Amino acid sequence: MDVSQLDRATPNEFIGAVAPLFEGAPRFLARLAGDRPFGTEETMFRRAEEMALGMPEEEQIELIDAHPRLGAPPAAVSALSHVEQGYDRDTSTALDELERLNDQYERRFGFRYCVFVNGRSRAQLVPALRDALQADRGSEIRRALRDVVAIARDRYRRQREGVGAA
Image: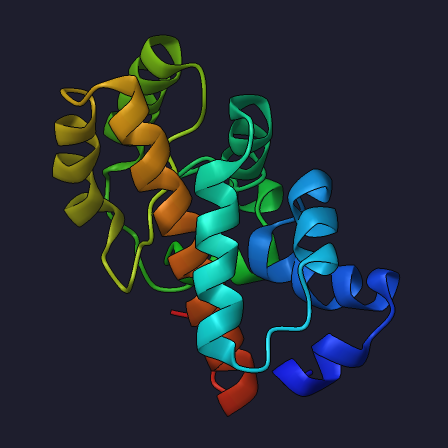
């Protein structure tokens, strides 16, 4: 659906259409549905980011944790995440290191490491995850929420253009 259709959709139709962009997160999606109309794609994603950053922390974590773990088993990720995380092309051995770093990250911050992969291999993401472990919790929440919206924006653009996710 384009933004004009999303603006006119019922709340349930809107949520159904945009849920794959955000991997679910029902409270966030309900908030976003109630914030229409957007008018433009730019406005929709700007307001999505503002909303995500302004929600109570419990809802922010729900939105972040809606995304699969980086390097999760292929059967545990959505079709969009499967392509974005490179399961169809990346055969690197970084999975063991990602598993170890994910465990450290989740123990330290209390939520999943979520990042806009943006075509990077898993091996290329290992240093970013290591660096994230040095950040403070509030900075990581804000970074992850911005990346959640960047992922959704990229997915929306790719769907609109009829291009597979990367």
